[in-house]
Image 1 (cartoon, helix red, strand yellow):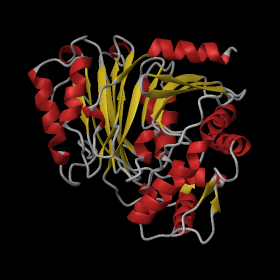
Image 2: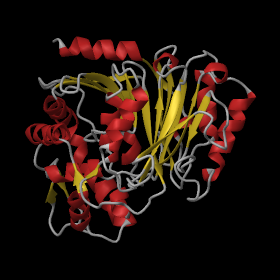
Image 3: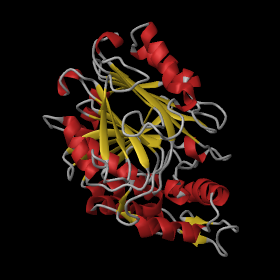
Length: 421
C-alpha cells in the first residue's frame, strides 16, 4: 500500500539573523554547515520549541515535497484522501501526540497564517492552512531504501564498534528534502533520555539516531508482506525512537528493543540496525532486527539477526543491512539488493574499518534506489563521535561531500547545560 509508504521532509527558507530568539525549551545553533537544534523538557515542551524555531519551514515542506511531489507525483490519491487513508490506519502513543501537538501550537504562535498556508492549486481549490493532522500524517508515513554496516573486533581499527549508514531516497526538484536537514539533540524529561537524531523539522521519529550511551539505531525499508491487521499501525519512525530509548540503562539492549517492536504493529517490512559498544551486548557490536506485520511468524513480529547468521556475510564481527531480509524470510526479492551487501562484505574483508574508512565504504554503496543518498552517518563508539554527511544538491549524494564531525559528549553536555538555564 504505497500511501502508507510516503515520507515527508523539510524546506529551505530561514529566519533572519537578527530575529529575536523566543524563550522556549530549545536553541538553534550551527556547527560548520549543519544546523543543530537542541531541545529539552517534556515532549510537549520540546515539540513547542521546535515548532517555534522552525515553523517558517513547514509551508514549503508541505507544498514542495509532500503535497506536490510525493502525493502529487507518486500516488493516484488526492492529498485529502491520502491523509484520510494513512491516519485511518495509524496509531500514536500519547507522548507522540503531545510532541506533535506541541509543534503545531508552537508554529501557530510563532509564525503568521501566511507562513502556514499552502498554495497548491493542483491539490487544493483554495490556499490551505496547515492543521495538526498534517503533521500526524507526515510522521505516520515512511519508506526508504538504505544500506548500513556495523564492525567490531578484528573488523574495526579501534576494536570497538563502528556503525555507518546511508539514507537513500527520492529527492524533490526543489531540494526541500535535503536543504533543511537538522541534527536534533534531545534531553527528554518524559522519556528520561538524551539522544541525537538526523531529521527534519516536524519529524519526531528516528531514521538515524544515537543515544548518549552511544547506542545507535538506523531504520531501513524491507519487502512488504500482507499485513495481519490494517488499523492500529504504529509509525515506523516513532516506533524506532521508542525502541532505541528502551536501551538506555538496559542490561540486555537487544531484548529491550525487541520487546518494544513486538508491541508496535506494522503494516510493511523494516530492518532496524542496532549498534552499540561491545560491552553492552556480550562482545557483539551490532544486530539487525527484521520485522514486518506477520505476527503469526514463529519469532513473532521481529526476528533478531546476529553476526554470522547472514549467508552473504558469515563473519562474527560484522552485521550488514540493506532492503531485504537475510534471516526472517529468504524468498522475497533479490537476496543482495543492488549488490550493496556483497560490496560492503568484500571491502570489510580487505582491511579493518576505521572512521576515516567508513565514508569510503558508504560512498561505494550510495544511491541504493533511483534517488540519491540524502544523508549518511558514521558512529565511532570508541571515540564517541558522530560524523554526518548531507547532500548539498539534488543530484549529489551525501558521501560526495565532507562530513561534519560531532563530539557526542560535547553535544549532550551542551543540551544538559541549556536545560538548566
